[in-house]
Image (cartoon, rainbow, N blue to C red):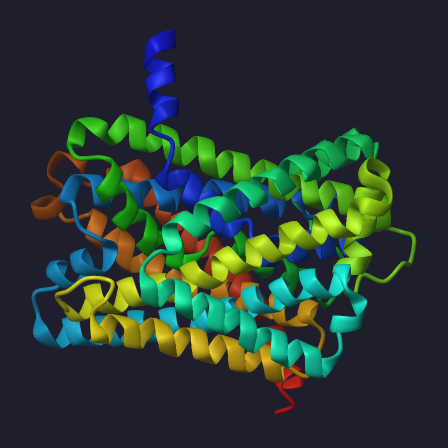
Length: 421
């Protein structure tokens, strides 16, 4: 590729970077750290699959947004002509998004609280946790209600990226067994543990996030104005998601090198911050806390917003971010997330791991509808899915269904235990 053309491509990095910043949240850091600490390098292949799956799905979402100029919800509604089927699809998608996003929102808020508690242990008690959850929810509410969340989110994305650079450096200085790293990446195997399938599902759910498919399709419509921009959109997607996957893998590698085989428990951000000590010494917990809080806070804003975009598109509502019904949707998701984070009867780590697993259970539903829409010649024209694209999408859905089915009983058991059912 010519240097000036490559430079131009980098100038258009945007929607994909937002997707990457969204999935590198507290759920990713927590899930990947627990994965490395519990299973060493053996589940890196699951992370690799998750990244490739995310590239496939997000490329489809970006292509849909560029070609049609509409979001995923609007396209789904328009693609289904039969009113009965359209209503059934709307109910299914809206239910899936609400289940996934409320669980994800709970994990986001719990992650932000975990960041605060790791830096200031006096604020980590149950009462303080509930108060801080309400405070975090109120700040997120104010940002969403005013419509000025974009500027704040950009600042938080910078913090997340700074944390990400730290994890990449930490993975290197932790002196991992690089042979074992390569073996874990390219030789799939399941450890003999009841939690292994649950962990694999969590890794998929923390990377291939269903609500990002709705966000991405809408975001590319703002950045890219014509079908000629498709190569730039693909470059943005593959580079950004690939970098996000590299960061996630670095967290697993750093945690494996620091914790695996030591018997040391990983029950919170204070424990996870130890992997930063070789690089930052006594400042490790504060850096980790700032990054985890920033990741949680930015995702706390984007999850309810994405749910509102999805519902508005599926129901054909007109209006903008200040519409009453639009605001009602994100208010509901935010309120549920705050409530569950404040009342959760287990550790924040358990809440976050459960939210990632719930994401993976929702993913096949959204991926199926995305694939159906991408096969519409009327909407996509020459840019509709070809055989290879459909095969890749089918493989992603099939593997996700397989892993989710194997972990379903564990997800239900953990949910029941978590909330005292």
